[in-house]
Image 1 (cartoon, rainbow, N blue to C red):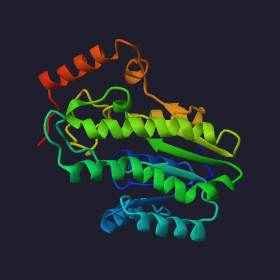
Image 2: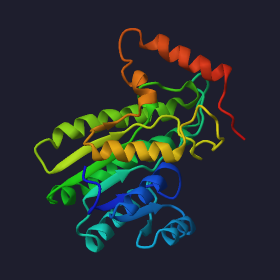
Image 3: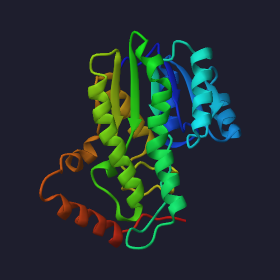
Image 4: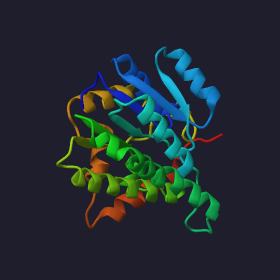
Length: 253
């Protein structure tokens, strides 16, 4: 992926990894448009980054997605990079009944949101000389968390979708990239300063470096062994990993 001269649209970019990527790409000389549900946060980020633009988007709403896609194509006809970053990560317990509203909200946001947003812009992106779609999945695509079972399943599904979409677009001008973050110290669950979490600045720096190097799958070194885990012994490692989190839980206020 070229790192400058793009017109970039990022969903869920008012905090955490989304904001970090938006600001890094803005500094590199791209026109960046961010989105989120809360206008005051969009205004806060764009005020801190003159030249950046913001637009309200409810990623769970097909109508909102269609409206924003239409606005982007009209007002930013050179749009050539879509970063599907919006997501939420509530806890659940697959050993108990899970509230159906919680399940639907997670999957509508984290899986259907990226699919719908991409679908709304795909023909526009294919018409660009060079375009990029980036899906933000997670290390839990490969190492699911028992305390976030639906979130993990949704991210695994988005990983699968990314792989097939990359193949389907292989003869077009559109490249498809997956970023699979480790545990990064953001407010997705709780920003705690836990030493097991990768600092946000370090994650963004490494991700931008790998994007510039042409990687199709952005995996930081700390989780490469987890990415390479699939095999008949997979469950043993998953069980050990989850037991470690049971014994040393993530602090949450």
